[in-house]
Length: 416
Image (cartoon, one colour):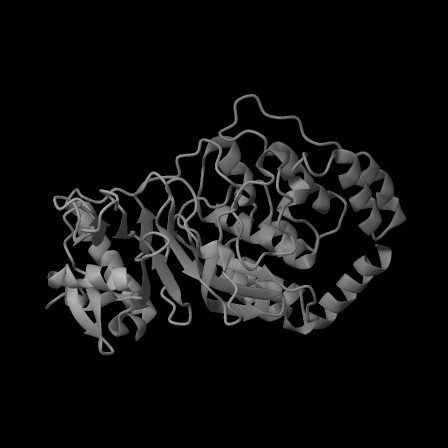
């Protein structure tokens, strides 16, 4: 049986349709890639095309030894640009010129250029999202340009096509030709997801005013009253992410749906640093119980009790955290307990440093009786006492009936 990757390798991955006299000449001078696209002589590139440059799908330049599409025009660079399939099954265009001659442009229906799709970073590159609705134009210089068009076979079912491309990328990697460069900057820019959650942290001063890496959203994976989770690709690294967008307003009656969706989330190993449990940051131990703790932290965000930014002493000091605890107490007898809160001192040799204050603030929510028992059990520091995923799901859905949730959130809002 022929694998889907090999079967799709013969299909047209994309076409480069000329837009001017010079690009039309380039098509004529490269007959091996010549094909008609809706009656227009164009360059046709298959998914399994073997480039002269190992690991690439297509290389463009003046060098006959290393270029598949040869630029015979005077003054063109030896190496212009290349197309490469990354491990996640995403197609990436990379500029190979030293003068930033190659560029890509995408415009919205109003004719405005969408800035996040232009070549950025070091090396200058960008994912070309598998989306028919985005009109991309690739410029080799100010006078030569091609319209980029995806092949129909790859647009019929994008998920299947991406798996096939991921298989082709794996073949390139096994052959020893594929090189997936990491970002060269020693101080990488802050990552920004689109759309952005209201709880996203403030950009640190040392990363302020630096170019942001952005994402293209493919589809919605799930949706509840508290927000939606979408599949998105980082336009620089070509990695796929599940991005959560929080809604400003929520419907309390749908909390049960939200808990059920969160309870199904799993991470194979560890996860985002600010969601790691104490056993992971102190000793490097990561088990299923670590996923339960991460689930509990997300649950605190849903409840409006805590977000990762509040655990960072750079953004909220101990006095500000004590004030938050006092603002939300339910009984005056707990006020003194809140006032005595102090951030935990750092451990001497932890696996990951700088997390004890975070853990202390999460536990202070239980100490000041701001959490229900079902939530406390999910966030236990002792692994033996922490709830399993199955038990947590049962207890949370029992503990947070819509009526009880409405009552709980009303008390918090009235005291703010």
